[in-house]
Length: 263
Length: 160
Image (cartoon, rainbow over all chains, first blue to last red; front, top):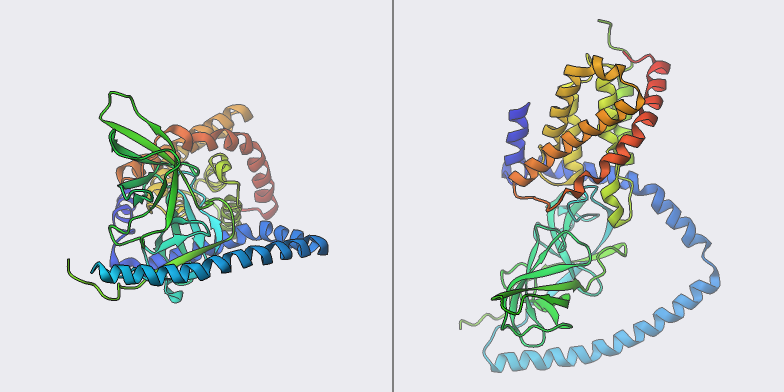
């Protein structure tokens, strides 16, 4: 039995021959999560149903206004994007990677408190694959780590085993944001004391490593810890996406760059 | 040694424990989630050691590992080790009074969690502090309830 445990410990996660069993395990356990989450969801449904007409109308009006603002911004964005593409063409650099998104619903949060894993309701049948970036409304949330046929598991970027290559939005300084297991805190280790990172800087994905599309907001710097004499300091940042709220997430699909030019 | 009887009750109670285990909790409260499946498993190990043993423990552990979605086999090893202790000492543990029994069960749950954490560290899923033990006190408090409910169920269905 001990040997069996040891063998599964080493092979189950990665062995390609076991992918069918892995998918089955992911889907079955997602079913258990769905049943466990059902009472809470039913309660939410009741609350939603009992919500007064007035409150709904107010919310509707608010959403209409917000939508108007967002649409106006999107118009400008299209123009800026076109302009940016032209400039990039002039500079002979690669075109921005276009990414499409798919909406998935969060079924539950994994029961293991040491890991930050979400159970989501899209799987390989919907085109989900391992490593796919997970986005919230405001920014990057994490990536898919286990894929079943109909469901999958996604790791939040605050998990202690997760890291994202980023750059500072203000000046392009590159860094690596690591999770530490706290839902409202990520860190950048080993930042040279002379590096230009300030409190309030926004860290966005740099696209290095090829896993995350560039340009998505990741975290905002809230503190910089370091002795004045030390060579390196540690930057503490707060995730921009609201990781422990909401029921829906976006899965980004990265398509290949359109016109790659050799440098 | 009697014929097995109403064994489905054992599996059904373990399944119910898994469902209760995955009830959604606010994000930071997850540390205090009681180890329902382990407690139910340990009850059956104490009550019917000739029916529920190493094999059932490993099945429960594998189920827990897959529910966690992390290293499959870690909790299986943990529950197998704890179950071994039960199988060697069930006659003694049965005689303990309620408080001592709760403490013992707390120890057994900690043992399973420690083995799990040790194996997680081995495959690089380390967690920095002892927060993973936060679920033990609540599990200890819940043990008398679980024991009495399961004992009533066992007598009602005459599980053997």
